[in-house]
Image 1 (spheres, rainbow, N blue to C red):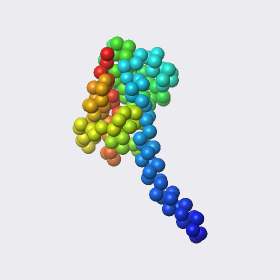
Image 2 (cartoon, rainbow, N blue to C red):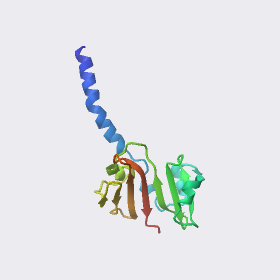
Image 3 (cartoon, helix red, strand yellow):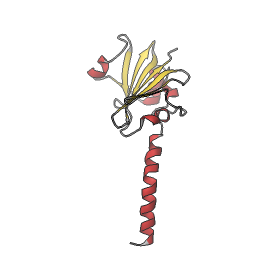
Image 4 (cartoon, rainbow, N blue to C red):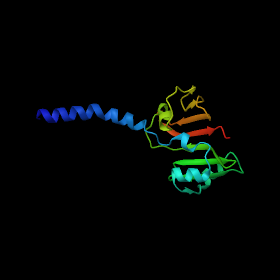
Length: 150
């Protein structure tokens, strides 16, 4: 094996985990862009909305609120008084719950609550709480954001 190949393999081995970690911190959704926005504004930001499947529609907290899916069911928004109020996000697999603030384009804060199946943040202006529900390996199953609706 020549020296160049050894150096390449060494660098690839060292940078692989770094690239995986930085990929986790890229925002999936900039929460400040969609929180408290109208359906029309959000359609401009996220693209066209679609109807929910029966399971997601049945899980609505507010029976009279409108609830729509965006980006192939990766983002679900429930509107209260025509403003985005509850936002559910299903990011790509393998993202650790600790990366939730970065995933939402927010400054990194330590979670207020950390349990085996849940991490929760409450320290962001305009947001009631952010809850990252975890799989058994500590990666995100889904994130639920409750906004302080105007």
